Length: 245
Image (cartoon, rainbow, N blue to C red):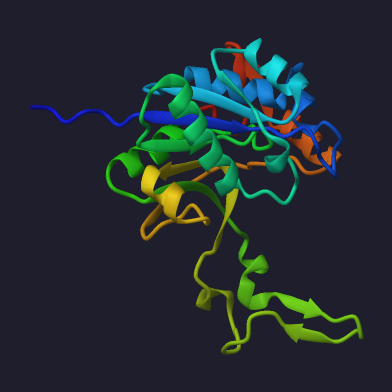
């Protein structure tokens, strides 16, 4: 007998407040808001059982339902501040959707609207890794070696420099191993990992390296860059340097 397929819940967290860019999740790229692009993308993913947009903003929730099939979660005030962790929000949404839909979910996928230049292949691969036993899987981007943590410095208020991460002196860049940074395009998390680990990593977190630039929208210039690097292809956002549908 074939094993039952994993049930997948996609969560799009999109709070209304933002310090850097007011109403950031409603800002537009190519005529469509960031949260709308995330909903459109999620609805085109294969083998997804439910999609939920979680927000403290009625405007965001209204816009979300106009752009695809999704469950709307109006967050309680307790979960609306900037200090609330992704783990707290995802756990809330998991229990909310399971109660609303009477479903049980094995894999939870977080698509942040502020990382709009994701590709279908990298998200599908993150889900596949978790389905095959990884505790979680994140999309990451490789850092230029010039920004390696072994080369970073701290500047004190007294004007003194110190090495941020003490260790052996670095003579040549060839001595340094590649380092990576999470880019926010996708986090796929096994159910137990979500419940047990606030870091959303677990004991064997896999990864998918994004091959092209993935701007994370924190400032106005990030919006401009994201628009420059993308275009609309058959109704959804595509990346100029690597169209992967």
